[in-house]
Image (cartoon, rainbow, N blue to C red):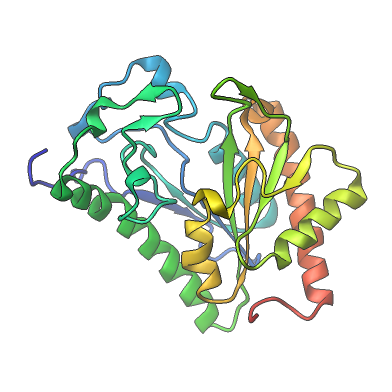
Length: 264
């Protein structure tokens, strides 16, 4: 790849922000919202089936995140390009930020990337995205507001041929307080298939955004993983957005009764 800007002015910016001034304490993040590719990279050598599959984006996650943003009046920041170009839930030094293989698929356009190739991708996608998150969170904290960081993801029901029966994973890293509150609310509501750190956990390297923006500031944080066959259409997206909004509201209420979670 030539040493030029990866995204030209007609494709910028790398992210979108909705409801930056939302009333909710919740700040929603969707790192894998899109399967779009910068024109400069074509399709990375992938066919349409691969581009539309879970390897390129988190199917249904953006739609659920948008519905949650409206329902809660919550700020939302979403990445506009595919995780295959750069996985914004990974730091620049991580090899899987630029995956040469994702599950059963080889990604030809990511094979043998030079250090400069990787740096250009990080400069185009990772840093602007995370700088926007920093600016939003720090602005709210400076104004005396509380922040609850919630990242929205989806996962494939079959991975390397193995069936996954979890419906909603509630993930956390070292700070489990908000996840605990959501799990307790899910238990009281009788929701089935809601599990802690499933199908992934911090040992899988999936909590980068939580660590970078939540743990460092000691603000409440949680990562949500929804099985993507449950949110593949508008009906499922609406149902799960309503269900998750209820869990978030109940967890926020528990947090307030416990005296807040801004500082650990």
